[in-house]
Structure formats: C-alpha cells, structure tokens
Image (tube, rainbow, N blue to C red):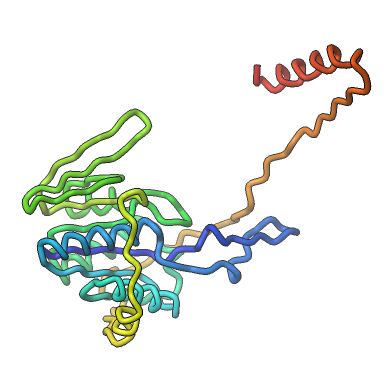
Length: 258
C-alpha cells in the first residue's frame, strides 16, 4: 500500500510571544515544528506500514532550514521518502492552490492508495484542505478521525463530534484526516535520528506543479483581549450586604447574563 502524507510547518502556538505595544505576535521568536495533527497522520501511516507493509511518502511546501529539519524528523519516525516542493513563502499560498499543488504531485508521483493528513494545522485550524483535495481527486473523505482501524480491506474511522460519534467505513482509495486524539506519535531513538540525517530529501520546483501562485495577504494578527468591566463593590459592614447583592444582580442583568 502506498500512503501519502502532506504535512505543514506550523508555528508552535504554545510558545507565542506578543509585542506589548502592538499586541501582535513576535514571529521571529516563535519556534516552528510539524503541525501536531500532521504528526499524528504520519504515525497512523506508519502503523499501517508496520502491520501490512507498504511505503509512506511525506510531502511539504517550503524552503527554509526548518522545512528540511521537519522532513528529517519524519524520516526519523520511519517514513520511506520525503519531498520538498520549494517555495519561499508557503504560508501565503491560498488553501485551494495548496490543494492543486498536492493534486499535481499525486498525479506525477502516485497514484497513492491513501492520503493521510492532519485535520488542521496548529496555526490556522481551517480544516479546509482535505475537502478541497477530496473534490479535486474525486476520492471519498473520512474526516476528523479520532480512532482509525484497518483490517486489510476496509478502513474504519470514528469521529467524536458535538452531537455524537460518527463511524465511517471505506475501502481505498480514499483520504483520511485525523485529529490529535488519534494516537500518541512515536518518539524516534538516537539511532533513528542519526539515520535520518543521511536520508535524501527530494527537492522539486513548484513551477512544475502549478502554473501561477496567488497570494493570500494576512492583514493583521493580534492577541485576543477580553476587556473587563472592573466593577468594584465594597462591603464595609453587614448592613451593606443586601445592597451589594442588589448591585451585583443589576450588573449581571445589564450584561444579559441573568
């Protein structure tokens, strides 16, 4: 079985720092890593490979040292080959064009039996790419999977949603997107990390996969701030308690909370 795992280099949102004067993120101070859900997708692909054999291919778009490091990390986990579609500003490529690039890669290097991908990236959470790719390839989509099983013929995926648990069943070829609840990704050994440093990263020109690239301008990103009313009700004696309660109730009613 051939499995393709598209991954994204994302910001480590647990370590975001903001400029106190502007409220905007200090991007150069934020570490970057494989998006958490993408790492779970790699793990699911490797579990299938370990049990049923096959090959796992990872592809990403970018050109920085962090992109190379991310692909080395994927090799250390156990994937068979990696591809870097070179482009200097992948974060500005609209999702629909990313989908077209992956479709073109699929057609040139595939076909693949399964495309496994993260449900979202750490820094955007748009959950849009898998649906677009499903439409372009005419592959069925098993979305937001929290638990995935494969019996050699059928994939069975469970997705816990607000209104209940959905269970999907399908044969390859198909696209599966997994959440961060799907598994706990393996931790490579030192031997695996050293081996990964010797593995080849296949570099590709983005112009071979899409004719023209648009740009999605990010106008502004700022810290979400909750403004507080800071109403202070002082109680100096027992006689003030009843009055204070009335004041609290009136404030809550004014805010529509009761």
